[in-house]
Figure 1: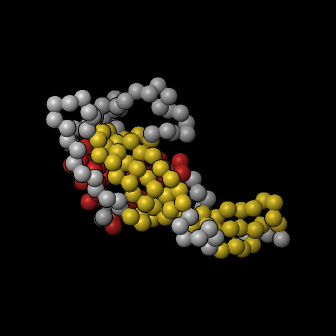
Figure 2: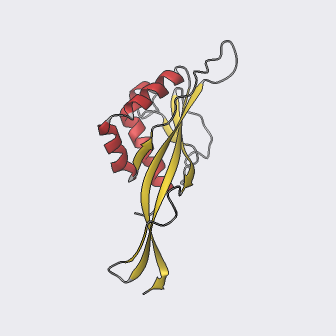
Figure 3: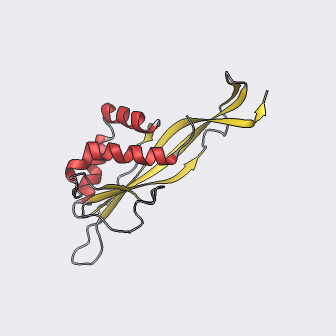
Length: 167
């Protein structure tokens, strides 16, 4: 499987709808408001903010902390393939009243084996670290929007096929 961050973001959105969607506002079609911050299909071009509470998801960075190359091999079609381990950090931010409670429940639900298995099926990546809960920033009598982020780390092995290198 090649590294595809769009697939990871979309898979995380589906997981969040499933495991924490009951705590979020719904859109006009009755779906929980979980969105990708910068979707590849530009579906957020209008810049409309959904009703709160909602969650936005974004891949913040991708690294190769375990060394850049795990394996090099020739596949059945005589192509050179490289296997690379990636760590992908995904930030999920809950916006709106009760955001800290929602993100706390989400973090707890990420510890369940069933939810980790769902995440793998939806993204092709394994949960490496379920993140650190932030402090509860509830501002009183201000114009600040309540929000609580959680950054999780996923790991996956990506196979890159070199079309120029045929053995």
